[in-house]
Length: 491
Image (cartoon, rainbow, N blue to C red):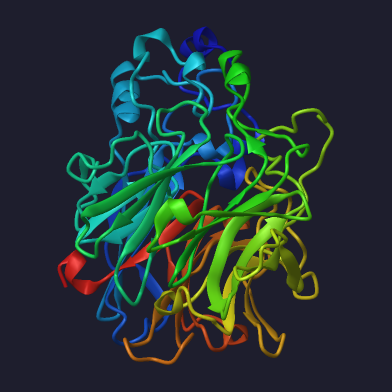
């Protein structure tokens, strides 16, 4: 659909996978008080679950788009003494404000300024749609292509972009920073900080009260997507994969990233105290892409890096550089280990189990330590049929808890035509044992075009929800979320 056709036909989204069925834009901002609850919300679970989603506010400028390019819609589910209230708000980015004023899309393909309407040349295209961060008493909506957007945690009012009082000198900030649970320090990074393809990566050390206290830069082997990182007590690690940003392609209007498996996968390990001057590079024996990280931990001189990894790129979003018929392969949980006492640059790889999966979480109190269990989205055909491929890949039908000591897999099956998203772990108490907590998870009821939120006992997923919170409508599929303590939302 061209812009002219969009004007003639009115506001109409394309009939394509990204904009059809359960994936269709929702675009609703509002409040629902005292949601229907089946079962009982656990006593003492007071605070808020908040998550980000990509919900296109307007049909795409060039008639097609990818899931990742939707406008940031934040969903906040507030829990108070057994009651649950829902609040949904768009992040009021400069992009959204310009498009609402024009009543049509003005920005083009994902992160490609050469495809934008000339009227917004040089305007910030941040969509703030990937993740949320609570740190230093502030709530942020994050998109790795832009600065954090600060939000009011009680109202979700957009307060504006945040550059840490001018100390963040670039234009980008990761959607996957890590909070050290022992020190309260936030480790973060930025890539393509000018908005263009670059090999430079900025590394940030942020104090528990939110002050950017240290920033250093290192250079990757090539300008790639750097979506996540791993942090242990003494090290920061990056897996550099060949999801390449080729600026000449971008200038031609082609996708911002392409998958180029001719390039090696490299692992950077940076000492937290010494910084980038102590960086070491390790070479992976396989080519593929890290999707999301699980955890990192140290065993003597050996650094273990647990993450989900696929032997292909994210081809549902970005093309192969030379093979248009290439297919995306599923990710598996793997442990990549490097020996920092050895001069060898090799990486040893162990698959943690044979269960396809993604969107992993751990008990956040144990980040950087050896953990026994982790949780992730997956499918188990023995429990129910697989669902059709969605705009961001195959939908999950289950959540799984993997026990790394026994190999046991414990599943929650969401039911026919139902798709759980990334879970969120909330400890039952500050001093509860590891993994003794609640899993909160959005579940898409696709046949009903509606959404539930379930609360599961993390120690027994197979028992099913202790509470199901029925939303009266659908909210858009999301990416990542976090937990807000009671005081953040006025409790």
